Length: 529
Image (cartoon, rainbow, N blue to C red; front, side, top):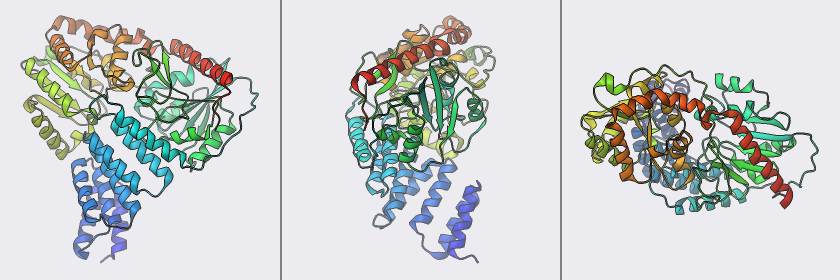
């Protein structure tokens, strides 16, 4: 019989190799034999449940552990448990509770840099909290800045660089098979090579085919995932004499936003891969557009807004789109609404709106697709949520993840966007598959993506200003089969001709902003730490 340490290490190896059922069985048998468990051992089961997409069980298990080990002196493990709970709650759509869990993790976490990671997690989760109040964001931004100021930041002197071309550096952990990668090709391939030189700082730990395709761009590529600290990464970027550093991650996963504290470049901006303020004073601007940000300043943002005249996204997909085929309603005999957005974005308020839409369109169905539905417990949890919100679950189909998800848009007539955290890539994909998107326009940059996409297609009328208008739009569109046929056939060519997919024009507009920012930095003397 194995001793306890060997049994734990065996379970750990099984987890790392993806043998989740065996790992769980080994842990539970070990605890049954010994009659006790440690917090470290119990955390391993939380990871096993997470990787099995059993988020409901994971959340229940972590709550049990946090109650059982509340008095544990192992603050690092307690912080880890709160972090894992926050992640599980966010995946389940419990955004407010997720924010609170991440704040608990910050309070217990001993490592200063990891505290910043947890604060980013809290800020990211807050984007799905219902309502348009900016009070929560500014509370979290103040916390992030406080943690950032606690780091030992090296003060660099104002540089005296004399390189010939303007050097632009892009910083991202998502240059892989990820939504962000579908919006970066113009940045790497369609810039003005007579005036600009492009550096890419990739934080991707495991490159894939998308990474390799992007690496073939005419850029200077730096793999920096191995660099151990924010300060060391800032020093690496600084050595390349970067004039404009563009962070593509914001507060998303594996971000290195704290690098901005070291003033690694003359101008530091953020955007594209994130949808709200960085919340820190070291950011010189945030990229947006005239539709997402009607005003140059926003109460939701700490930094100034840099507004492009059309879309701040330029969609350049790697996927080949399948043929559109016949309208789903013609084949199925009823209207099918759908949403392929991350289900963590679906609030109870959205479910209530969808319930009213389904009730107003007799015989209509709702098609959902997300990894949560890959597990029995995920589907059961969602059914319970929908029932509590009045959704007729017998008319809802839940599908798990699959490689052919683009073709599955053929089973949808009308896409229903989420709010206040709308779709980005999923909206572009729906439109390219001939599926009109009905969106609810919010009050902040990230809540207006749908309005921006539709306005750039010349279809702002599909963006509703109020929940009542959102319902009315969806119902009206469902009742106009002739219009649905026209949109089904015309949306893809309209997308291809739109500013959303015009890389050359997009880059000229973006480079205009770059020049304005450099001019401003020269005029003011910059903001060097």
